[in-house]
Amino acid sequence: MRVKTIILRYFACFLLIGALLSFIYKHTNEITPFKPDTDNAGLKLADGFGANKIADNIGRARHIIVTKDGSIYIKLFRLVNGKGILFLQDNDKDGKYETQLAFGDYAGTGITIKKGYLYASSDKEIFRYKLDDAEKVIDPTKPEKIITGLIAGRQHQTKSIVLDNDDHIYVNIGSPSNSCQEMDRGLESKGKAGCPILDSAGGIWQFKADKLNQTYVDGVKYATGLRNVMGLDWNTQNNTLYVMQHGRDNLSSSWPKLYTDKQSAELPAEVMYMLKKGDNAGWPYTYYDPFLNKKILAPEYGGDGKIEGSKEFIDPIVAFPAHMAPNALLFYTGNMFPERYKNGAFVAFHGSWNRAPEKQAGYFVVFVPFKDGKPTGKWEVFADNFSGQAEIMAPKEAIHRPCGLAQGPDGSLFVTDDVKGAVYRIGYTKK
Amino acid sequence: MKKIIFAALLTIGCVLSLSAQTKKIQTKAKSAVPAPSIVNGKLVYTKYCMVCHQVDGGGVMGLNPPLSKTEYVLGDQKRLINIILKGFNKEIEIDGDTYANPMPGLGHLSDQQVADVLSFVRNSFGNKASLITPAQVKAVRGDK
Image 1 (tube, helix red, strand yellow):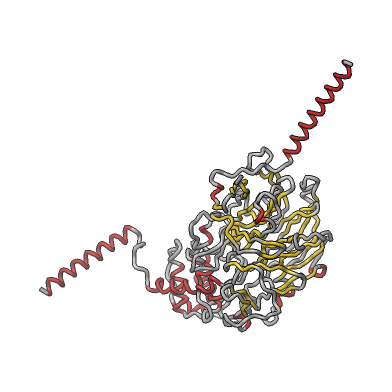
Image 2: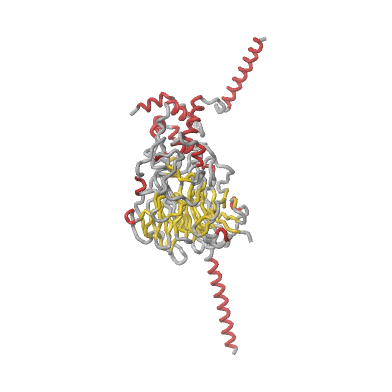
C-alpha cells in the first residue's frame, strides 16, 4: 500500500515536471508577446495600434519573412560583411531581435517561405534553402539555384518573388527603362515600336518552385505590360496574384509641351492590378490617370494627355497618388487585428522622388479593405512618420523609408526600413 | 540743395559698399550677389535637372547621383560639359554608392544655358568652383 502511494507520488511528480518542461519549451518556441515601445517607435498609427522597434541599423533591409515561431529572415539590398541574408531571433524575449546568422553572398530584395523552403533572390537569380521543422535553414552555404540568367538592368533590376499553393514561383522582371523611349528619359524621345523590352522584361514570369537551373525558356510570361513591380502577393481567398506597379516618371521633363511640373508630380497613379495568366497591363503604351479615371495613351506613343489608351489592356483595381513607390504588398490573414483588416491589403510606400519641385509623398504604410479579392473601401494611411519629418522635399531628408512587409504568427505586422535598417513590429493594443 | 543730396547719396553709397565689402571679407563672399549666369542657371536647373537631382542637389539614393562635392562636378570641366550635352549612362560610384538611372543628353540647351546651369551647380549645394563660360561649352560641342 505504502509502496503504491510512493509510486503514485513519483508518477504525479514526473507528470508535473513533464508538463512544466513542455510549457517552457512551447513558450521559448513562440513569438514574444507584442509590447509597444512607449513612443510607438516614433510612428503615427491607426487608432488602437502600437509599434515596437525590434531591430535597428542592420543594413539596408528590403523584404522580410517571419517563421512560425516568430524568427525573421531579411534580404539586404547591399551586402554587410559580405552577406546578404540575415536571420534574427528574440531569444531572451525582451522584444528586441538579435542577428543570429548572416549568410548568402548576394545582395537583393526578394525573400519568402513556402512549404519547407526559404526562397531568396539576387537581381539575376533565385535560390532556395531547405528548412528544418522550426523553419531554420539547414545548410546556409548550399542553396539550390532554381532560376538563373534573368535580365537585370541598372534600373528596376530587383526581383520580387511570391509563390502560389501549386508549386509555382512568380518573379517580377522590371523593365530597364522608364517608358521604352529611344533615348531613355530623353526630351520628346519617341517610344520604340513594339517595345522589344517586353520580350524579356516588363512583366511577371512564372517558374516551377522545385526545378533547378531554370532560365527564360523554362518560364512562362504570366503577365506583361508592367513597368516594374516590387510589391506582390498571392491572395489565398481567391487564389490570385496581385501586384503593385511603380508607375512611369518624367512626364514634364520629357514632354514639357504636354505636361506641367505639377501634372507630372501627380501623374500617373500608382496602381494595384489583379493578374490573370495572359493579362497585359499596358506599359509602356498607356498609363492610368487617377483624375480622369482612365487609361491614357502615353506621349511616347502619340498621346497628348487626353487620348485614351487601348481597351485591350486591363484596368487597375486600386489607384493611389503618383510616384509613392509601392515596395511591398501583403494580404492580411492574421487574427490579432480587428475583423475589418482580415483579408485586406497592406502596402508599404517607399516614398517619392519624382514629384520635385513639388513636395514629395508616400513614406508610409496604407491599408485597403478587401473582401473576396475585391476592394470594399478607400485606401487609408495605417502607419506614418517613418521619415521623422512633417514634410519631405527631397528623399534624403527621410530618416527611415518603409520597404518590406511580413505577418507574424500572432498576426502582428512587421515593416522594414532600407535607409538605416530599422525593423518595426506593429500590433493591436486596444483591449 | 541738389548738390548736397547728391553728396549725401554718394556718401551713403560709399559707406554701404564699404560695409558690403567688409561683410564680404568676413563671410568669405557668402553674401555676395551671385553672378548673373548663376541666377539664370538656377532657372535651367529647376526646369531640367531638379526632378531627378532634387531641390538640395542630393540626388536619390541608388537612382540619381548627388551633385554636391563630387569629382564629376568639381573636376574635369570637359567631362562635365559633355555629361550635359550627351547625357550619362554608365556605372557610376560616388562615396561607395552606385546610381542606376540614365541621364538623357540635354544638347538642345544653348551654350549659354549649359554654361549657366553648370556655373549654378558648381556654386550651389556646398560647391565652390569657377564659372563655366559659353565659349568653353561651344568648344566642347565642336569637338567630335
